[in-house]
Image (tube, rainbow, N blue to C red; front, side, top):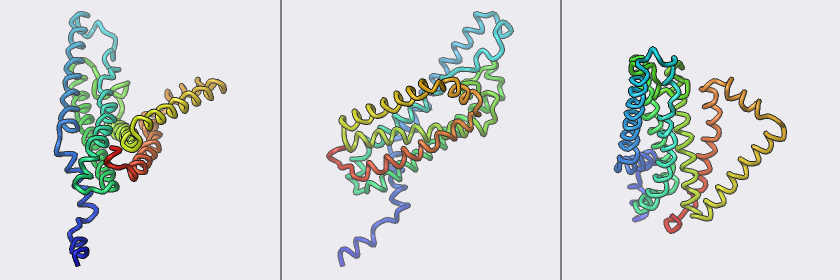
Length: 254
């Protein structure tokens, strides 16, 4: 009777997964506050530099057209999402298990949180890019929120680029973190040695087949949306790998 009564009080799976999301939101600083704070600080720094350059040049008319449209300052936030994922999986996992959260529910809840964060940041950055465009690049034909020549791309393409790349770095970070959670330092040694071997092997194949020109041509001729679409299979593989690794992780190894 006790077992039956206990089973009746078990929350349904969607509720348990959503509780994991709420667990992550309980400390909003690393995921919801700090990224925006640093983004605006970096933007303010770029804006100050642009203004100094314009003043030193004697006005915008003395600068080349689009001189400020290839800033990569916003790129930091995409890479930072990998750090967020590593912290989430490594630091929150043992804490969550202490609340009797299953490994499956923890990973699915964390994955849902990563998707929601990607939606939030992709939408927020795209809105800022729209304001940037409406103000003629902050009055200087500049591009911070639409980097690397994406200033003239449709906002939908920019949103998809942000969303896809953030998902990629979130789940890459989750996969790396689960390697650490399960196998600690030796697991990371093996992971990075394997990654280096793959990259060197790929470079060797491209070099021996004299295909560097084709590789460069692919990136030049392929649209930004298509390039981001090519990352989606890697995102899915990273998500699956992270789930499989975390299934057998223990609090002790965390």
